[in-house]
Length: 333
Image 1: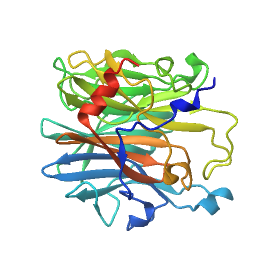
Image 2: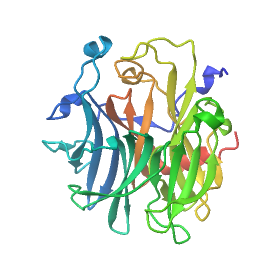
Image 3: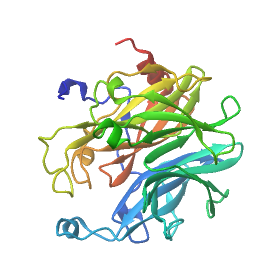
Image 4: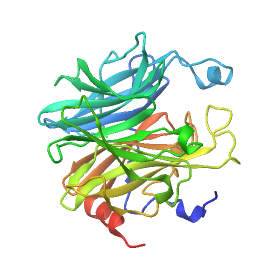
């Protein structure tokens, strides 16, 4: 399946911040890649949990050396741009079943902090939900999904009395190939999840042919739940684009609006990407080039800050007016 490349232009409503928010060079402990962070604003400060892969350089990777591991770093900021990083990793998991957790997404709900991770286990990729203490120093595991599921984000309030999350099951067998969609499930207690509903399918996104997945906890507006998601198109003619010998995918950022009371219902969607890889640091120099992975949205007055990973290597920031983002979702084009 091929696409009109004219589709692949970042929206003019989005402004990129010139400097990176976090790179491996900023981290005071071993770091090869810093990306896919969860970021929220709470108590007048920004809090970040970031994925940190370590133990190999690009040259070593090309010669067959693998990453030594993954841990979760912690950082704080007063302005959401300049972060102070803790001198040691904040969190890591490895036991007889769980090999690692990564890609944190933070939700504050009723004064408590919940973090959804992807977890590599001996029996598949699973979604894990932890409750964090207010200082993010201790984490209690609340639930894990069955394989294969990941990219979970928890809504910042209960809906119809239940906790609600977006998620991305990975049904390779039943769908025949990579064709992963966005689903919704709910829970009375964050431990037992069910009542699944399809929210958005790959076939619904005009600029995607491979997979989509939720990206950041939804942002509540008076018109609906504003959600960003990653959307992947696959082109087998693509060659080396990053550290790997062959990288055939491009990750863009999409945006949809869900009904406030019935969030399984999409009430608006931009038919073109919100952001595509365009800037020099997005199309070259990364672990995987041409990859934008949205991580968090923070509302600042009339502006929405969008934190995203560029090239699976560093954390970047873009912003847009909330009114413009809502207009994109309700544009009839």
